[in-house]
Image (cartoon, rainbow, N blue to C red; front, side, top):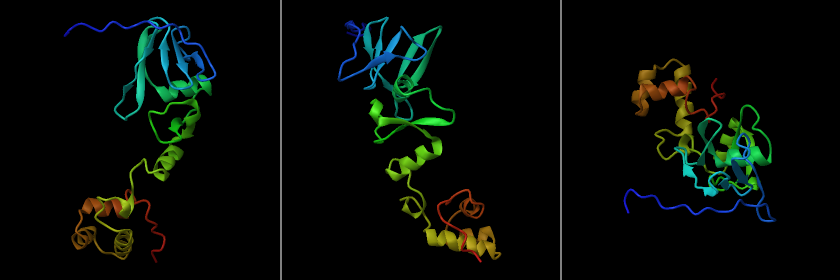
Length: 187
């Protein structure tokens, strides 16, 4: 029926077992519980909370209480309850790369650069350089462009010669792009 909400079946509060441990959500004690398996339970409404998916593809829940509602990723809530507060400049990493696997054993804190390295090593993040299927240049061509520019060829001439825009040449010569290609061999 349109306009009518399905009645939610109330569930008794979960208890920790050998399969799943429950703890208070930090900052929402007495309102919500989080499990080491990544599930959320509302003590007020007596229901398991269903997670949405944010714009980056991470499951999240909206927690209300203490005067305002806030969105939290499940991984963040699990680590905060079972490990510790997140250190400054750190982010949540999913060891197996699966954003939906929010079990405590699959989560860890990492610095942002380490998290990006982990994603690249596991094929989860963009591929750079000539390995990128959209690349118009090879690594050898990038080295050659840089060398020719160092020896005085104009960016416009290089763009015409290699069939790319001057903006692409700028990104190469000013080291804003193609950062994975070493340029130290230039004499």
